[in-house]
Amino acid sequence: MTRFNQLFIEGAMVPAHGADDLPVTDSFTEEAFASWRSASPADVDAAVMAARRAFAGWAATPPAERIAAVRRIAGALREQADALTTAISREVGMPRKLAARIQVGAPLAAWDMYADLAGEFEWETRIGHSLVQQVPTGVVACITPWNYPLHQITGKIAPALLAGCTVVLKPSELAPTSAFLLAEAVLRAGLPAGVFNLVHGSGAEVGEALVRHPEVDMVSFTGSTRAGRHIAAIAGEAIKRVALELGGKSAALVLPGADLALAVKTTLAGCMLNSGQTCSATTRLLVPRPLLGAAEAAAVDLLAAYRMGDPADAATRLGPLASKAQQQKVEGLIAGALAAGARQLGSPADLPPHGFFVAPTVLADVTPDMAVARDEVFGPVLVLIGYDGVEDGIALANGTDYGLAAAVWGPVETATLAVARRLRAGQVDINGAPFNPAAPFGGFKKSGIGRENGRCGLEEFVEPVSIQLPA
Ligand code: NAD
Figure 1 (cartoon, helix red, strand yellow):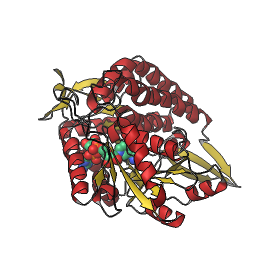
Figure 2: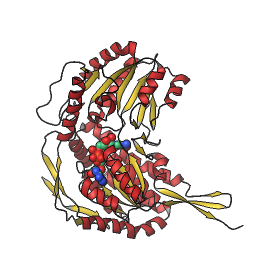
Figure 3: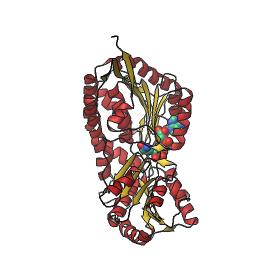
Figure 4: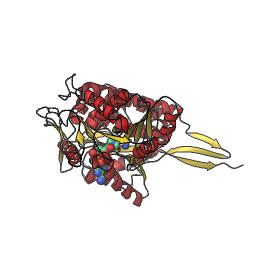
């Protein structure tokens, strides 16, 4: 087992002084393959103060130099693509082939996308006699979850650095390896000391110490609504900037006249991706009631294709969940739904002998009040719900505490677009349109505050300052 006791502070790998060694578990073998020493309170303070000292210089560095530095980081990270894929696939459980493309290839491309966008960004504009400058927000604490570790780190660190902010990153304790490889890339890229800092540790101790630190100007958080609420309360008390990317319970709304077979296939695929551990996964399939039988039949036919197994095996379509706790939570929600009257479609699949697996599950006879239809499951579980008219369908789609993503399926006409416009979600896909990393991403309601990705992602880390020029 590899033991890492290093943090990255003020441009160097330094020993961590925390009391805990946090194990990183292979979600297929169920064995720890690495452990990370957590940061002590003094380490957290050192990381934040390093970021504070570096801030003025980095903020004053011309954007072109910041862009060049970020491109060097992207280049150094790209050399580690294989190591990133292996680590993330073991940590999270996503099949390796998929992980290479989605967990690693896409975020690596995003580093360059953000650099391109920063090159086009209007850092200074004129409004009448005012000079409006976009200035970096300051020292940012970036706290990330485990399900798409490199993607989530990239969506914060790349735009924050480009904007001129300095950062302290605390990755998920379940999936910290990509953050360590990023620190190595930063070292090779030769960033000024203190611009990027990395600490490891639990959310309750190290994460919260960062949020509370008086020299942190902004907290950029991705994770659960539960932790987001707590962080927002602490940040609110101190009037810190906060960006929150939280949970979801996204609906796919099938309108009359839609290609039902394609809608079921695509929704199921989105729901099963990363074994359901995707915040924007479409986990509720809303179907006109007369079409429920056909939708059920289509789903049953597709279930067998989700072959469970070793994520390293090219034939595996569905890997394990990331942790035992997550597996137990999902099993509990399925059992609760069945006890409340839901019906499981298809015959139960055999689970591999080890690994935190949950079989691909489609539930029918689900009512909107059941926990499985309201709460984020974060597992391979799709619920089918019938509706009685388009207004009812829209109300159901919008009728949860969340508002992160949604999908609409219908004839390619303005009516489908009109329905899409009425969904209270930050991202709405029509007829299976693919993810667009340059488009804003974020949520309404308890799905969060703010937007990441593309130009909006960059704007999260700047504040406009108006300088009034004399006549
Ligand atoms: P989590 O909230 O448990 O942890 C996320 C991060 O926050 C971890 O680094 C954790 O250590 C830290 N943390 C936890 N409590 C904290 C506290 N009190 N103070 C400071 N930091 C704290 O979430 P998770 O289980 O790692 O991730 C799954 C959740 O993330 C799901 O709810 C999912 O929907 C959400 N998510 C949202 C998005 C999005 O973009 N909206 C993307 C991915 C995941």
